[in-house]
Image 1 (cartoon, rainbow, N blue to C red):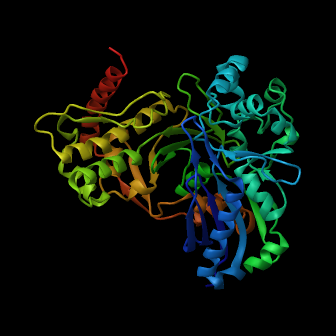
Image 2: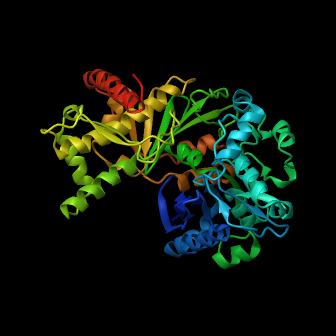
Image 3: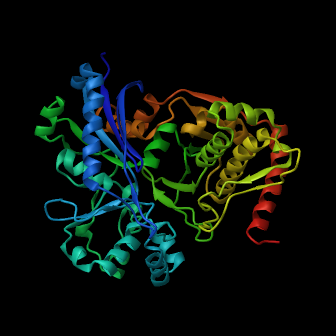
Length: 493
């Protein structure tokens, strides 16, 4: 091995992954561990912040052990982190309680209070978002209401990214994509909003230090470098929010949207000016490139709907049905699934509907309906919701879609999505992209002259699914039918 090697760490909500990537985008080694999440019927969804660091260390050790010769070739490390999770820490950076995650719903009332105080239009203009219980600001207000003494003792409010970065190099730095997830960032000026901080009596000194993603935060701590047998002075590069890292690795561009087809889906589209329509509620973030912003539409229970169907079939049949077999079943049903539509709202509806009370449904079932039709209807229902979200994301001329995640392994689903959205879908060879995006950030700061060059040099091969004109026309009609069924389910005319 003679290439430079970069370390990408992906600290997600469901698990942590460390990966070694060569400077030309070849995966050298990786290790993954699952994370635990404590959820209660009261809406709490918390994690052990110290667990973030334990998992990071474990993954680093195991990953480096797989490729010992790569240690001396490592040129930098960066972290991709879950975007909204945070924890109050004391003056010694020790967590004062469990960390809030983006799945926590206890601050719904505080989110409504934020909107009432600021106004939806003004909040969208500053922060680029509609207030939700998953943002730090409402969660901090909830904590003030329930444990003001703890809030007073907090030295800092640490996001997952700066928490781990601090342990790596001694500097608590986060980037603008992470800052935007707090609901306290001015996304135009890329700094903490003086207006929002004053309105809610929050000191900027208690928030992470903001730096552009892809800049060097510091050097790997000496003791840690010795323990991991990594080069002394290894640069630790400021990382970013996981979906932005994944979009970078998947090849997002001014006319190329990315779609992560996992348990849930995030659609990312770059625009050249910030935009937030409170009616559609599509979150807007500063992106990793200068003078660029990202619209990010979450669509819930996408791959989760397919897993639900697989598990349901397996329970009823006592079978071992695989996703590959579901793919084959869906391929045997024609476009439109013989009149069956599926609304994939098994955990509410995300963008652009924002209906937490929405429920899933099959519509159009008949005596002639077969299991093949159910499988195809699930794939098509998700594709229709992806189109609904894309239709609400304005500001760019969409020419193509880059698809990644577990659902991208399907041979049928990418073609359905291509025909439904009406443009070519390209599928990345790697399903897990966040760690690669972090490695690109590290490479842009240490090996290449820019992040754009790192993105180009480390890009993954893709396979293309061009949209078929005839099927696209057929799906235009089916999409209109689907939207009609959805509105009737929600009490529309």
